[in-house]
Length: 447
Ligand SMILES: [Zn+2]
Image (cartoon, rainbow, N blue to C red; front, top):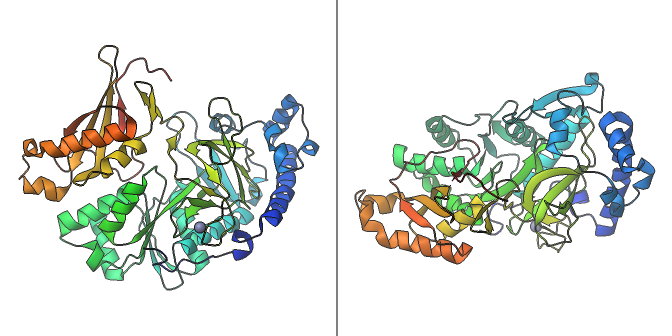
């Protein structure tokens, strides 16, 4: 699949900038944003005072560690306007992240912020080979969720045509894809897989033959490399993992290049660090930990050392696509989605990886954790692939070998023997938004 979509670099001046020059640029921007936050946002001034530092103490990237972290809780407390560094008259757009566990967080954009957002999203589209003549089917939700508008602005910036269909109404997604000949699909990976199954099963359409999608930009969820490969097969496109978060900008922080060896981060705008999620100590390159981001160019709602909660690692090793900017590995999971079974750390993606190594197992699964006595029991419900399910006419008892193979794969990936229960196709909940896979029924889970 390499280079099959004709990937290109939208802002080579930054994406291919020599390393030393890039560090100079980051440090220059860091000094500026630190002073800006200190002078404009009272909570930062307080934090600096409590830590006994002033903006003059932050001169180089090595000084970054002196700055206290910003947490999601800090942003919630400052809701609605406490994080704003600009007069509301300068703000053109307001987004509020979902507030399921308390207040939402505010993400505001000035004209300059919208410009940066459009440009980083254009870089993402270019990395996936999008050009002027492409038609982007934007199946991310439009509204307060930043996915829809982020992908919309990027498509406009690059000069492509955008179909703002938003998420849901799968039948119409497939019909319009066929009738308009859309070439780029943007949505969550679980929805992409769902569209692929729906087209085949409910509409008799083979997307690899009847649709013109050449690449897909999938994000806002944690997913595995194996699922990426499976979506490519289902939809006949090249799938790219993209990453971003509303507290920082929305989608637009990083994306895979056609090498699919990690996601290039736009480090001229978003300064990354990896820290130990428990101690907060900075980890060296290559080590897995929690991603921390500092916005170097945001105006309305800048953040310094924001704890993303996402687990990944960083590398500055050269990539054959010629970009000099650092890469992060695919997100392993949320620091708080990590679960332990009999002391072994894992994320839902760990299971997804194990399942998709087995031919005949689908990406539709649910994990149930119980502790009836003292030992954790992990049950994994898995739907077999449709064609396998049909071959045995829905009689799951004929698929003993498949469940044994899944048990073995989970054991070799995690070291844990799980109960595997095959369930009929389409019996597990499908997700059109963010997927949640674990049901933890244990009472006293110790982390
Ligand atoms: Zn690359």
